[in-house]
Image: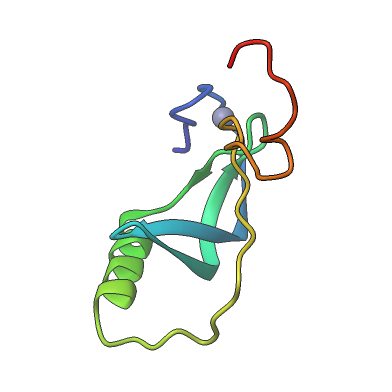
Length: 92
Ligand SMILES: [Zn+2]
């Protein structure tokens, strides 16, 4: 019986998702992961066999099907660029 561990909803749909995992601080992407996705909050829940399979794949002998460049965004304050360094900053 499905129950979402985030919102408690009992409704989910079975689908395939693309999952981003961190492997020793290196992001890896696993496609076509069978999951139950909560219809209310979108949380994806995987069964133990799937988790084991993924763990075996990324730690084992399986070769990635492709490699991609990824753009990374952050909400941290940007560091001072050279362009802005000459502007007068009241707080500096
Ligand atoms: Zn949920």
